[in-house]
Length: 318
Image (cartoon, rainbow, N blue to C red):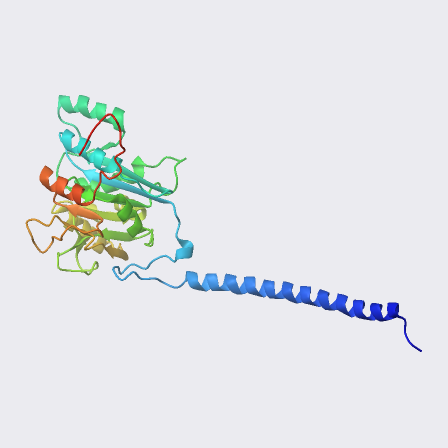
C-alpha cells in the first residue's frame, strides 16, 4: 500500500524540525564554552608581566591600565622668581594632555619674608591658584624637599576628592623643561604604588636600584608621599644634597620596589657636553639645566612648540 504524499511530507518535516533544534542547542553550548574560554584567557593574560626594556619595574597589563591618571608636578623655586614663574606658566599652559589625564603644575617655596612678596605673590595666587607656600625657611638642601612631599597628604585631604588625590607626585627644578604628554605616556604602563621614577645617578649608570634619581625631576607614587609624612626616617636625615638624601630615605625605608630609569629620555642640555648630557631628540621627557634664555629657546624651537599657533589678523609672525 503506497503512503500518500502528505504522509511522506510529515516524515520529512518532523526529523528536520528536531535537527534544527539540535543545531541551535549545539550553537548555544559552544557560545558558552567560547565565552568561558575567552574569560579564562583574559584572566590568565592579566597576570603576565610586560617589560618595555628600559625599566626594572613590574608593569601593569594592558587590560588593567586605567586611562585616568592624576599627576602633581611641584616646581621648587623662590618667592622672588616672578619672571621665571610667568615664563613656566606659558610653557606648561600651552601643552596638551590626553583625555582622562590631569596634570597640575604648582610652584613651591617656603614662607614669605618681604612685604612686596606678600602683595605680589598674593596677586599671583588670586590669578593663577598654582602656588604652594610651605611652612619652612627658604633653603635648598636643608629639608625643603621633605617639607614639600610630607605636606601633600594634609594639603590635599578633601573628603570629596578622589582617592588618592594624585596617583603620582613629582619634584622638579625650575630650569627643567618637562614634556607632559611624553611623561604621561611613560607612566601609563607603570605601577601606581611604591614607584620611584627619574634619571638615575651616577650619570653612566642605568641601574635604578643602585643609587638615586637626579634632582632635575623625580617622581613617586602617592603612597610614598604618605609614608614620608608618617615615617621617622627622613626626620633624622634632612641635610645634604636633596636628591641624594631622598634616595637615602627610600633605601633605608625599603621603599621604591618599583623603579623606572627614564634615561636617556631625561637628560641635561647638550652643552657643555658631560657624561650627563644628551643631544636633543624626539624621545624626550625632560631637559635639564636650561640656565638662560638661549638654551630655553633652542630647546623650544627643537620641539616646535609654537606649531599650533593659529593664524589671525591680529599678528604676523614670520
